[in-house]
Amino acid sequence: MKLYRSLLLGLVLALLGALAWHWFSQDLGDVVVRFRGFTYSTTLAFALTAWLLLWFLLWALWWLVRLPIRAWRRHARAQARNRLVNGLEALHQGRWARAASLLERAAAERPERGLALLGARRAAAEAGDMEAAARHQAALLKHDPGAAALDQAERLLAQGRADEALAALASCPALPPRGLRLQAEALVAAGRADEALALLPALRREQALGHAALAEAELRYTAASLGQAPQSNTLMQRWRAVPPKLANEAEVVAAFARRAARLGLEEEGAEALAAALDTRWDEGLAALYGELPGGRGDGAKRLARAEAWLAQHPDSPGLLCGLARLYMEQGQWARAEDHLHRALAQGAGAEAWELLGHVFAHHNDPRAAIAYANALRAGRGETPLTLDGRSLREQIADQAVAELRNEHGLPLLPR
Image (cartoon, rainbow, N blue to C red; front, side, top):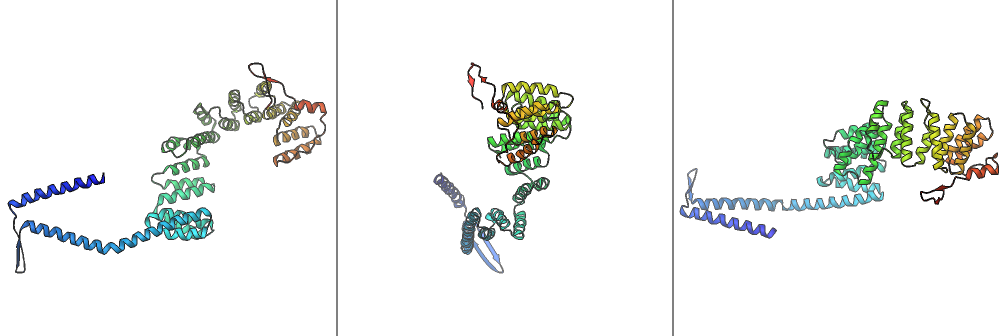
């Protein structure tokens, strides 16, 4: 293709030369120059040829004069690129002083300045030289305000200063994909997850996140938006707007249920939990179902529904703990204790021990101290202390679960 273009250009120039000669051959013209008594006359063709030759000679002279300068510039840029590569390698290896020195010198060349200043600022910060880090940040802000704003926003967000991160991003005229992602994360951290949800189409369009990461972000932003709803009507509007594919996700349903309980919508929260559990069983949601406050006298209804689930999931520690909470709300302390022993036998941890301590404390039972101590030990991953007062028959009953069969009547192994 390059040879073809050169050949075509040569043919065009030859054609133009032929036309020019044909035009000038009929009348070469006259050019007369008079200056302070001096008179010089020649043909127009010769004058034009001399003029073009003069310009060519001047251009060649200028090219020769600039040749050493260009060679020096190429050498300087090659050195800057080498320093940039070596500096970034030193930065990756944790050689902060070497990285800062190389990258600061690489920043002398404009093409490498932005990336070099970013690396130099990080190296100086890692080395504890805050003065140098601030100097590099100021130079980066002058050279590339957008890159400086992104870097500053990322650091502010990591420090938990979401509002300041948003202010830094606002100075960018047009956010790149990384900036959009930082803005979305900062909005969530600042309690404005509903605005972060509005950025999801742009994140998808700019391919700022992979498919799995984008789905995770949508799930997390939706849950955060529900958890940050300021009023009950706003919460219900956002809940109705949740996409069907997320309506039964444990994280989203739990966020809605917890926020609904705080805003006086306990029944709505419990219904959402029940619908999600009927669709797909989740231990965390089962435990949360019992944690919600009663509200508007629906405690008995919730208790009956949880007891029906127990027939299908007899070895669920989360459901057993939730049932124990509901029994405690209804004043049925003995049944709560039985279910907590079963929960512990099925693998429940610190939460079950703490609830059992509440039951013992209600009866002024000295075993409450052991139960509370076991809650702390379970939280630290230590072996719990032995709890007396349970007969062998009761211990066997705690371990036993009802036999489960599939749709073909075949027994299923316990989980």
